[in-house]
Amino acid sequence: MIARTKAQSGRRPTRQNDWFCAIAHGPSTWSQWAKRASNIAVPTAVVVTTRDEIVRTRRQYALAKAIPGAKLFEVDGNHFACADRRCDFVPKLVEACDYVDFAASANPAVSALAQGSRGQ
Image (cartoon, rainbow, N blue to C red; front, side, top):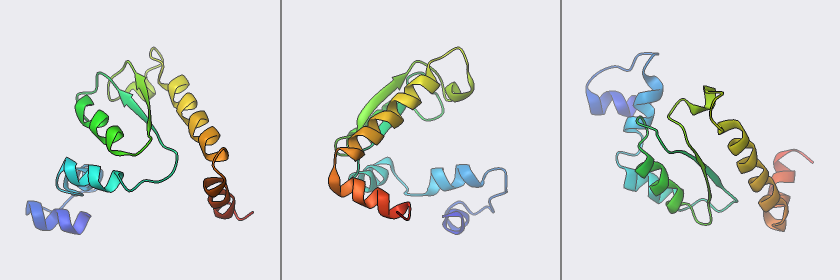
């Protein structure tokens, strides 16, 4: 993705902005991200930060909607909610992880896949 970014933007990514370039210039549109997300076939939880001004909330909801069967968990916080002890990010993240764990264990095909990836 980074090499493609350089060709698209005409500038060489620096170590500081590599992550941004990869996100900004990965699939070139949100519809392409949504198309990729529509292929996800395992239990999925999406944690949306409802006051995010970096990754707009409408895009977070659109991405969640594109993932078949995704369960949504909303956090009343901005992009940095994960580091803000005053918001409920961590409890929501744990709830989202618990949901995925439960949903995966209830699906024999997903459980078998998970067991295989753990080398068991």
